[in-house]
Every structure is written in structure tokens, then in C-alpha cells.
Length: 152
Image (cartoon, rainbow, N blue to C red; front, side, top):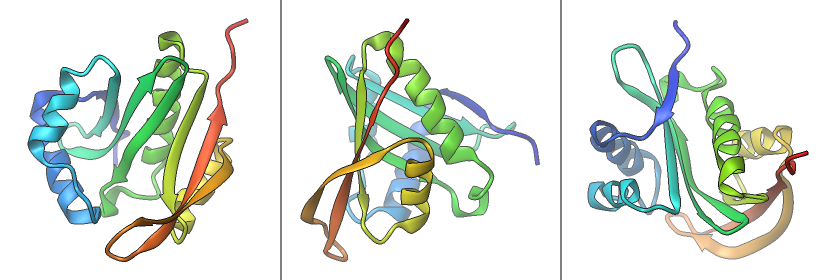
């Protein structure tokens, strides 16, 4: 299987992203909300697409000054364990640096061991917990954060 291309989110990706949101998140973003991110100067969303243009995964973020927050990361189940989430995260960090981001924060379900392992591998550290943050099922969120390297 060929390596997916990582690109900025385009309007043609939105229906596929919304379908993934609906299938895999308990509080999914709808198409209108995702589309709004295209016009938000604080947002940066990336997609991993195959040669046919199918969205295999995506990551969405919003930044304010030196702080960036990852909103969602998702990879299609059939495309998992191929390094797509890691590639998306690394490219997101690379693109956030010139925007002035100094640290990235995200929340992850406490039970999501594969995602936690990935984030730790990428240098994220737990800085807190949000009790009962997630619904369906109710679960705590671990707050993870990574300091980005400063330009030399």
C-alpha cells in the first residue's frame, strides 16, 4: 500500500471527515462546524489522503499566540498501525512552528492506550486530568502537552 499524502484540509475532504467524526467520536463535529475551520485563521487541519483522494486520517488544531490545541485526531481503522497518526502529528508540529506555537496541548481518553503511547513517543507529557470530560461513556481525559523547540 502506498504512503498517503499529507495536505491541508480542503473543502472536498469535509464530508469524509464528518463521516469519520460521526463514526468514531461521541461528540462529533458536523460538516458545517468542520467547514468553518477553513475560514478560521486560528485553525490548521491536515489530512492524510490516499492516491484516490480518500481521507485516511486527519488532525485539527487551533492556535492562540504561543498555545496550540489539538481538537481531534482520527485514522480510519483499516489504515491504522501504518504511521499515519504519527505523520499527521509531526507535520502539524512542523507547520505550527512558523505560526509562533511554543506548546501543544491535547486531551485523550484515559482508556485510549494506543493514542497515549503515540503521544508519549512524540514527547507529550501528562500535565493534568479533566474528570468526567468525555461522555458516551463518561470518562476522564488526560491533558497532555508538548513544548516545541524554539528556533535557533
